[in-house]
Every structure is written in C-alpha cells, then in structure tokens.
Amino acid sequence: MRMTLRQIAAAMQAALPVCEAEGRTPAAISTDSRTAAAGTLFFCIPGERFDGHDFLADVAAKGALAAVVERDIPNAPLPLLRVEAVVPALGRLALAHRCQYRGKVVGVTGSAGKTTVKELLAHLLEGLGPVAKNHKNLNNHIGLPSSMLAATGEEAFWIMETGVNFVGDMDSLAAMLEPDLVVAVNAGAAHLEGLHDVPTVAREKCKLVRALREGGVAVANADSPELRQAIAETGRPAVWFSTESATAACRCEFVSLTETGGRFVLSLHGETVEVDTAFAAPFLAQSLAAAAAAAHALGAPLDLIAERLTTAGLPEQRFHVQRAGRWILIDDSYNANPLSMTAALDAARAMAGQGALVLVLGEMRELGEVARAAHEALGAQAAGLAPAAVFWTGGQREAVAAGLARAGETDSLRELAAPEAFVHSLNELFARQGDDVVVVFKGSRANRLERYVTALRDAA
Ligand code: ATP
Ligand code: MG
Image (cartoon, rainbow, N blue to C red; front, side, top):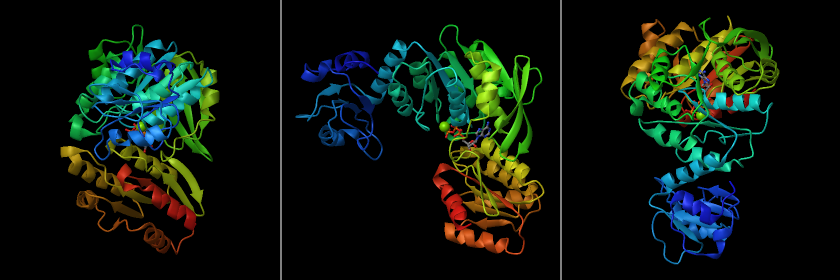
C-alpha cells in the first residue's frame, strides 16, 4: 500500500490533526502490538480480552508512525487518526487499496477447503505472475483487510479467502473485496450456530458473488444443490466444476492412491489430462477441480495447470500424510465440521485399505441444534469403517457412542488422554501385530490434536 497518512485519513474518513508525519507512507499496517514494527500504522482494535488502545506506548516505543483510534487519547505518544470505529475504517482502507489495484482479485468462499483452494490456486497462478494471498487463515473482518493491505499492489493476482460465522458477516468482506472472480468451493453444515441451515450458508457465501465486479464470474461447485440455487438467485454468470457430474465444464476425478499421493483426471472445457499429485485423498478432487477451473478462467492453460499440480503441496494440518515407523499418520487436525469429517474418514479408510485404521477424533464445534444428530451420524459412519479403535476428546462423546452402538460397535470408543498415555495405549493395542497402521487425527481447532501427531511421530 503506497498512501501517505493524509491520504489514508481521507480514505478512512478519519480526523488527522496537522502533523509532521502526514506526508509519510506507513511501512505496513498492524493490528497486533507484538508484531508492530518501526514505521507501521497501528490499528487499535478493541478486542474481547485486549484493547489495542492500551498498547499505544508500546507501539510508539517500537517506532510506529501513527495509530488509528476510536476514542480520544490525551497526550498520545504518536500521531492519531481518529475514527468512529476502527474495524470498519480498516475495511474502508482495504477497499481504497483494492480500488487502486489493477490486477485480478479472487475471492474464495466455502464451508471446508477455502485455505486449501486458496493455497493451491496461488501455486497454480504463480506460473503466470506474482500473487498476494491471505497470510495463513486470516480471513475475517480483520484478517481479510489486513491481508489485502499487506499486498503491494504490484501483483498480478490477489487470492483472498473469506470466512463467515454469522448471517451478515459476508456483507463487509464482499464490499471491501469487490472480486473479479469468486470460487465457491462448497456449502455444508458449518457454523450453524450463526448460519442456521445449509441453504442459508449458501446464500451468505453467495453475497460474495453478488459483489463481483462488472464482467466478473463465479467458479462454483455444481455438486451442491444449495449453491446452485443460491448462485442462480444472484443472476451472475458461473463456470461450474464437479467431481460427479459429466456435464460440468470442469471436472476432476480421483483415480487411485500412489506411493507419494494421489492420481487424478482433470477435464477443463473438453481437454483432459491425468496428473500425479501429493494429494492422498479422494475428496481433494473437489479442491483440485475448484482451483484448476479458477486458474483456467484467469488465463492459465491446461498444460501449465497440470505441470504445476505435480509440485503443489497441502497446507499444514490439512490431510498431511507422513510415515513414522509403522504408523501412517494423517494429520487433518486443523478443523472439523460434518462435511470435512465425513470426507476425511472415508479417505483414511481408503488409505488403510484392508489394514488397521485408528480414528483420533475431537468434537465438531459450533453446530448449534444439529450437534447431537451430527455426532451420532459420525459415530455410525465411524462404525462402518471398522476401526481398530476410536479415541475421542471433547463434548458429544455420548452421542458418538450412541451412533457407534446403533451400528453394532459397542467397545471401540476410548477417551483420549494425555499424548504420552495415548502413545502408550496405541503401542499396547498393536503390540502383537507388526503391520502398518493408519492413524487419522481430526477435530476442532480447540482440540489441538496436532500434539498427538507429534507425540506419536516422536515416539516411533
Ligand atoms: P476455515 O473455515 O477454518 O478457514 P477452510 O474452509 O479454510 O477452513 P481448510 O483449512 O482448507 O478449510 O480445511 C479445513 C479442513 O477441511 C481440513 O481438515 C481439510 O483437510 C478439509 N478439507 C479441505 N478441502 C476439503 C473438501 N473439498 N471437502 C471436505 N473437506 C475438505
Ligand atoms: Mg481457512
């Protein structure tokens, strides 16, 4: 972002008293005093636990150029831009930056796999030019504008995922992003506490499609009836991708697991290619289809896409597969909702083949009223996979047990204890057989199941 403090104040409708710094350009923006560096413009965000306004002395000592505040601070140690509310002002600045940008802006939405698709699409488009994207998972009303403002504006593409928890959350994200292309990965039962049901999830996500610029296009999942309906309601043009339907313009199908990942067949507008990837799960055909369709719509030819897919990796904790001694560890511990849980468990069984499979699972959170039914269904699905053991942590244990019992599994559920105890019980469980064992780890962020992956790997 190349704007002076005076221009920034104008873009945010902020009051900035005449000061020596007004003609200077911030080196970066920051919303976290711990990472604020010299020359930054610091946004004082009133959070639940900390209030950014309490850290003005801190950031001034680190050499911050100025701060954006929403209340009067007498005798502040640095120049202040005073606004009504800091978070919306951050969004207005991101929009101003976006309006100066001449490259293409991609918005990614969906219930499971946004980060996966964002990273994959970035990797594909880096074959055409420089790319900016959200840092990790910074995709909400603070993370998205921060990610946009971290872009220099010199890039050919911005690829930004948008995260929503409640009806209305997409409004401000869509307004600041004004995308040229939207990837609608899927719509499923995620964040139902705030989004009620799947049609509402789809409609909220499609607000991003409504915000498309003139001439913009949606790249959307044809396999979701709710998305098809919600996209149709926007009246905007769409390119459809699918892992099921032969009529979709863009398709990806899982072929087989390989020594190092998975083989897929990709078809884009009548051209077909087979690719070997590091993606070792059938459900990732959806992410591949979404990213490839979007890259193609942005000008990447199929041969470039196919070539770059062979070197694409998965973000950490998203179906990351590693071997440690006899254990084949699938780290899918980043997060879980019914959509991604079902997909991961089926993929884990596919990887285990006829061999032993251990499920290390945690509660799927934020499901509201459907939480119990979703966990019973999970228990029933788990039973169908004939696991050697199911370790569970978090709430809803009883619902999972009921689902398992309904499907005839009464004694495979165990409480997940401390990591060392978990490693010990796995070693005991498999002491008498020497074959490989596939262990899949999946739960909500709060379960921090990655600790168990590390413990088992380090003990192997
Ligand atoms: P968040 O809402 O936390 O930002 P996200 O939508 O960005 O999540 P990812 O972080 O990419 O999603 O993946 C979350 C989980 O969903 C991971 O465990 C990942 O393996 C799984 N996942 C990724 N892609 C898909 C898909 N197409 N279908 C089902 N699950 C998927
Ligand atoms: Mg994400």
